[in-house]
Image (cartoon, rainbow, N blue to C red; front, side, top):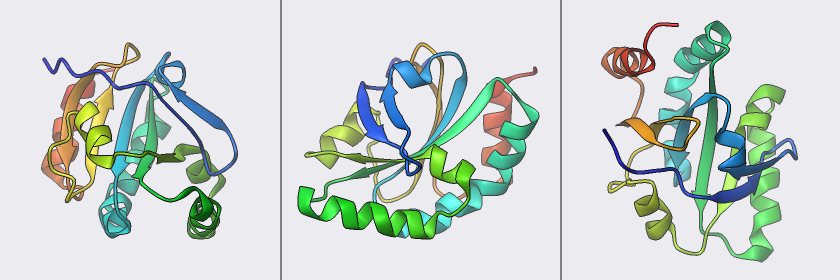
Length: 153
């Protein structure tokens, strides 16, 4: 079992809703996509259909996208505006959280992510334990593995 726990973080979803861990991880299992660069967009989008079906079928599971970014304070507003333009669906805006960090390497390490070259996918329990992890684009094998980790309803 993975001993890594999701670290305390704070941010604001693209729809303006405040987000903080651990508070917003309590109460449901959360599939967290962690992206570090814009080049992860295709990998993020590849998970979309699977995650959409998953959260619609299971009230006990939700999904969030965290963008771990080191961006100067003066540029953050511009970046958030660009992200809002790219993410138009209200439910996706509510689930997309830019997290501005001073040390991206340390942020990745705090999540147990050693390779930031691909999207990271984490299953986070309500107590913040990370109990499953994957990376890269969606595949049938990755989806089956995550489904197995989630277990039967």
